[in-house]
Image (cartoon, rainbow, N blue to C red):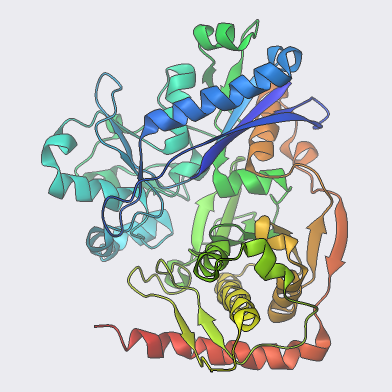
Length: 483
């Protein structure tokens, strides 16, 4: 048996998979997020350990024999978090999360130093780890002086599991300290941040064994024998492993809280000016690139809260595709990454009319997110990524209308996977299997069975292209209204 642990922003999922990659069972537990000030997003790392204990405890209650047979564990987690610990492995302050934007000035300052883009292959975004730690240095110097190690969220969970300070390449690529082409920490970038290599965890590949589960936890969970813990991956890399997106030409669109358009790459081909992320993949000698929008289903959930209806009800009110709305929505509720790299921009409805109803607002929100994903596709293509079709995952992919809109706007067939497990926890379990058996990643990380393919609706291609061009013109206009 293999155990995948996926630490998400809102909770942790523990998934059991057998040696034939069949889903056996899962346990889940929630995590709380704190927003003490505008732009701040924090979590107490103790909550991650509690969530893991509860999720695995649920598995022990429902599948005790299967849990006892676990041989290896893989980890996945939300990226870019800053977990600061002292020499006794005690947490120094709440962890700053991926959607914490307080460090925008520090990020801009680092980004003006040419070595950051040259070595990391990426813009230094405010949500990345390095600017957050720089914010601590400038605003909480006493805490900064006591930092012995800086860990990403899933790697703090690993510390509890194994007692080791270890991270994988894919997650570490989102810190702004990794030389992404060489797959190693950059001394030059650490120097620029007043840090040293000793404060960084040891690096391994996602399918490489990095330690063993502590004996006390083996006993608590009813496991006999040694259990290895592999590197795992950042959430998007692990999700890519879960859906078999590991070779050039393969890609997926994820409609989760944030929106992701990801393309696997067989070689390192960064282009920071596009605001596309270029990161190491969770398997050796492979990379991936992705465009990220910060509010995908989050935009629909926001509208649900405003209207007093659930997101599912709003989505069901939309029928088959019938052409774009005349109302435009810019989904910049929390700023935007790709392609604008703008933490201060905010969302807007443009063209509101007294005749517009709730259904029109819902359609505009879905179309706005879709147009933002088209921005991401254009940015990926500018880097040389070649995508001829996409797999759709995430909660938003359950809306037929949304998927049809994406297929038509992006002019790409969208594959919908058959029911089953294929998320980040499943990807982490697959990496655990590879680490335990030494199997060829290509033989393990295969795509899921496809239930159906949604083709672009040619009857509406021209009208959606016109609507997208109109959408593209609105960002400069909205930006010009900022004070």
